[in-house]
Length: 236
Image (cartoon, rainbow, N blue to C red; front, side, top):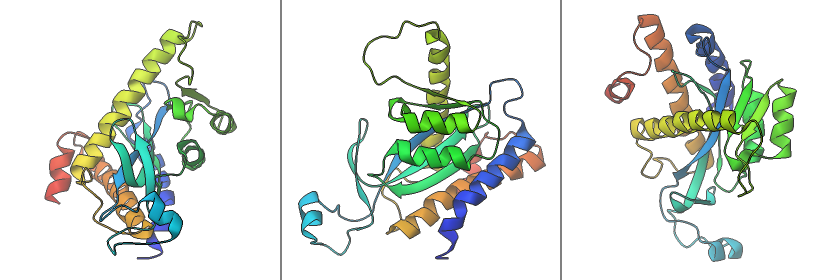
């Protein structure tokens, strides 16, 4: 069980590739993926900065592997981030996943995600946090393009604006809905049920793999891929 978490990113990328082969999600659309991270709260009390710098752990419930991040939606969160690459298509297929302490930079982990994706992808799509030279380079190595929101507040007026608006809208629809579905199915709007990075990684990435396995099951049963998938997983 201790060795399992480190094998899960490879299992997810391999099964993601197989699901793309089966479902053909990009048959009538661009081969695009949405890159994003979502914060997951650690259980127990948070480890405040002053105590952390002093090396003092004032309560045994504190998960000392976790860290702080600031979300525009959730505010300050003490915990971890689940980093995902999900197909932008009629069926949301996780193609790569990583689980890290919440303070690790999205653009650094996204470079790992891009490298882990085994399917051919033309467009890697993210918000402004992903608009970094290292990710542009990582996408080019894969023979694709990075499409990320501008960090500048000035309005863009070049000829590609209208196309990027469509891509950003599709990315937002995909990743926000998938993150919401994931958190509802696996009940992680509340703190994680596990303590420590190894246990959290096993739970978070294991649940992504479980979701993929259900997609595989539904394909072989000839059922609609995402219809009532929440009820199916909850009942299981």
